[in-house]
Image (cartoon, rainbow, N blue to C red; front, side):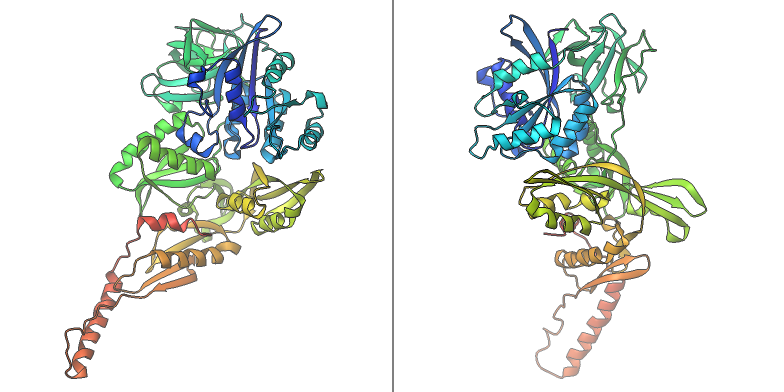
Length: 599
């Protein structure tokens, strides 16, 4: 156990985690030169194209130290985006140390601080690494001062490295051996192992990735998953190298994988504890929590016959992504589909993209919203959870509605403070703290409703700060709010897929935007179409698409005007009847386009 080191790599998005991981794999000869490729641990095409890490990736390396010992390094490369912070928290729980990576040209960003505090909460040994020092724009002294202020280390503790050129890789590997403590655990105690990830293999079933804190697991052992209380046989155990390497046993301190032949996703929970069936009283490893989705949206197949295929696809995707939740729902406009829970808008975007690429499922996504709490009149303690606008009770039986608030942290340059403040105030936020980290870096803390950042907040923040603002958030609590249901009507009929729950002060503005957008998107008919936005019985916005007029007088060559008038009157009567019984067909494209209101 003295020769094992378990550590993860944490940083803000785009600070070079995956590139640095590539150099570590190359230096320790974990991966052969001919197999080497950029972002070697990112195995999804989507990760390569976007240049982001979506899943945590664990890998085992062997390092021959100058002192003659051969060390086993278990490294977990974590995602940097705020939407995937659940993955990061699980990875941190499985390690004794963390490499805190900071880009020398960008300095400390919001997600860096967020992940650092998460690591400190777990008592991890932090090794600060200044990456991209070979760049012309690298501010080595300034960013080193920022790191010293943040974690209180000495300047000589900071390792200067470059993932591109390989500077500082040996120093980094030596620092891992010297500074990160070896795992502490008892080999002769009953088995306790923490699940930090799982993937689905169509031949083997679910493959569980875990870290053993105490005990030994052998091939053929009977194991129990603590939270589901189900027993299985360990068909195979082994370590995580570029391919899975099976072993007869794994001991305390090891990171590895377990295959039990499980095919059902609900039986594996990331963060759960694995124990031996013969020691059922073994306590769980603390820190397990259910994933809390932040954003909800309906996902519907374009063709209703694909409903069952979509269900299968979502179940397989859930195995690989523990933070996705879904349940069936139906809509008048779109038929049968699923109400899905996501960690954020990027997560929603990634899931939609993966459904299309990996499972050939083209889907329609409804207006995203968040989860609200409502309380009924006369029963102030009876909580009703609202996931869709249609769940909102009528005003006459409603006591109050509460919406989720978040603590938002923005780090930016001083010249963008005014623009960022006005954006956050426009989104119903209020400033709680303003701190100058350095002379050129300021941290703004806001409390604001989660629903306001769901749509376009991140994009607008990036554009007004020219990319110099970083954003991170975590949930706070639920607070009372004036929420109303905004209904969109076409010729008096509700289109429930376009309904939204909004704050009363924003209802009119949003209603006008959706109506004018639909006016451009809907094809003209032979009758007048009234597009209305309504709150309850009150119409707050309206647009009208005038009718296409067929030329019924084309066959009249000359003659008395009364002949033409007679035909026009007949057409008028027909139009009135058509408007009464005519249904408006909403093209699928309109549902997707309405979401892009600010384009």
